[in-house]
Image 1 (tube, one colour):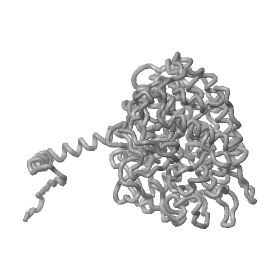
Image 2 (image 1 turned 30 degrees about the horizontal axis):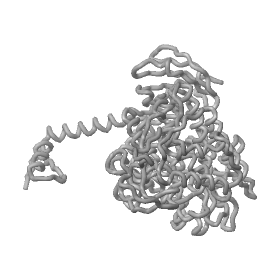
Image 3 (image 1 turned 135 degrees about the vertical axis):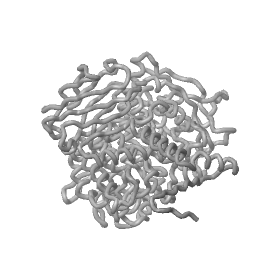
Image 4 (image 1 turned 90 degrees about the vertical axis):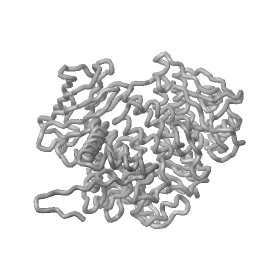
Amino acid sequence: QVTIASGEAYATYLVAGVFDSADEANAAAARYCSADGFDAALEANRTFWLDKTSPVLCSVGDSTFEQWMRWVTVQPVLRRLYGNSFLPYHDYGRGGRGWRDLWQDCLALLLMEPDNVRSLLLSNFAGVRFDGTNATIIGTEPGSFLADRNSIPRVWMDHGAWPVLTVKLYVDQSGDLAFLNETQRYFTDVFWARAKDRIPASSGTVLKTQKGDDATGTVFEHMLLQQLSVFFNVGDHNCLLLEGADWNDGLDMAYDRGESVAFTSLYASNLLWLAEAAERLEAAGTPVELATELTVLLDRYFGSAIDYADPAAKRALLSRYFASTAQGPGGEKTQVDAKRLAADLREKAEDLFTRVREQEWVEDSAGYGWFNGYYDNTGKRVEGEAASGVRMTLTGQVFSLLSGAATETQVERVVSAADHYLYREEVGGYRLNTNFGEGSQDLGRCFAFAYGHKENGAMFSHMAVMYAYALYARGRTQAGWKVLRAMYNAAANFERSRMYPGVPEYFEPDGRGVYCYLTGSASWYLLTVVTQMFGVRGSWGDLILAPQLAAEQWGSGDTVAIATSFAGRQLRVEYENEAQLEAGTYTVTQVAVNGNPVEFTREGDGVRIAAERLPAGDLAIAVELGPK
């Protein structure tokens, strides 16, 4: 018992933990259970987290948004610590991270802690199989992988798309083109031919050539293989097969005939980027070498062209590749001509784009138009007017816009349709889908959820923020800011959201935000704010400054700023908008780096500063905006 007299104070210090011995527990108590020890630990803790968030800071006319964004930058860090299990939200997954998580977590790392990302990216490619699929679970060490934590042979068709997006960001931010020519091994297990077949179990998870050596290939080869394998793996409507699911794990009941039109668009844009990368590698004096077996998939390049309008011909060609490589690659490499390779890849991409633009556009009797995103397991188109009402998914719109598949006219009509059918401010913005009105046993278990919960019609942050990114990328500033602002307002309204500051995985119908540290949405929100809203991003190592800030984001001042990492430097970019011009009416007029004017070339309303014009060290960049 303690008696505290008037004017006196009494402090008690407690340590809670798990220790290997009483001696370790006593040592911890001796370190922390005093005023000096406690204060020192608290200050060290504060310093640690301030340092974690300081590389990316924004300064706008809303101090609450600035502080909230600081918490958003913390979320990817906590995700890496907690994996998929953060109480009280523990019913998603069993801890750890999967393949998709690996690549999207790196998006935030590239902006916050870029120093070790190169080695991390390289180790990730060790999870790719030689059939173009990949292991899905990260092992205990970097570069170690498992097929699945439950040994279920399942392929998510979207998995091959994310490495290209992340590597593209890395190359754009760093200019490190040589990374594409780094070599890495391949993963192997009993699953083959996109998990449709089995092969004899090997003695380990490292693929061997038929000569017994470790099978290796460049990063470029790994990415190309994943895109080509999916390109030929099509359904009856000539879009890419959905297989076990795409990014929406709940679309898992259309294995036989389901197709993901949404990711057909994304893979097409990836093929275009790889085409340009091949040409840049050759121009830099680095010939492109590929496993000889891969050349069968480059049917245009090697004179064995098939009819891309024939789904059966595509599938047959892929089957021939699987049959020829089931015993492992031969180990031989073929040097290819980059321009002819690029031409092959561009023809494949344009074939997919044309199909999405023309075949998958739907309109309803109210005059709205949008893209169909899926076919179900009976081969029926999912989106459009149905007996239960209008069916529309946000996913089908995101990737058609982001990839460039959508024409400018189609972009405008998609925005109008999404605003009409999907936007609900009270749940944080754009729902993942309209109410299909019935459980769909032909598409996925997600429709067993009550509408408005999880993947069935919730405001699912991951896809919503990617929609914002796509809108900014297509120059629709106000529409993009509408998405980000709605998510922020919903999350910051604690009386409804009942969550820590940051972005939830989704909002429940009553507005509660859930799964704060499961989500990769924080990485995408951060990426969108820095590279699209503030427009500070790289392009093959050059610096792009192309802000898309709405006038209201300046508040009562005339300057806003963003701090971020770029090409080994810490940048602080300050935009001056003295006339308070609205986005779309201003353009970059002057740029000074560390107080000195710098030359630039104009790109739209923004500018490009060549990598060689940027001095070494941290940079303070002042940008003046003026009327067009």
